[in-house]
Image 1 (cartoon, one colour):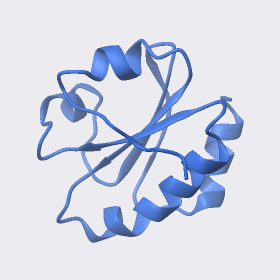
Image 2 (cartoon, rainbow, N blue to C red; image 1 turned 90 degrees about the vertical axis):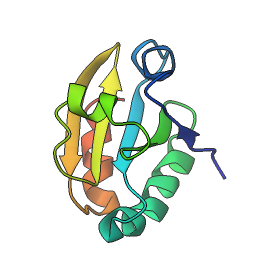
Image 3 (cartoon, one colour; image 1 turned 60 degrees about the vertical axis):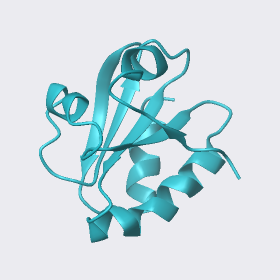
Amino acid sequence: MAKLSTFTDAEFDANVLRAAQPTLVDFWAEWCAPCRALSPVVEEVAEAHSAQLQVGKMNIDENPNTPGKFGVRAIPTLVLFKDGAVVDQLVGLVNKTKIEEMLSKHI
């Protein structure tokens, strides 16, 4: 099983914006049922693309600064970063096919 990273406000620049490979960030919260439903799908995507993609989660309650910086207004939100910039995002409970379609344009 591919390891999902846990991203924090403090390390976001180093671990995501300066990452060598594209990074998919799942913005979520413990109390969010759709976020919990999306979690296994995000894990599957991480497993399938471990060679060319970093995947991780950011708890918005524990890390309030970063989501605001990138316009995250609803959760779950999946944001794809590449070369220090947002290149795509999906909002809400989406299926694996949707995520794969988004990724195929960028990796």
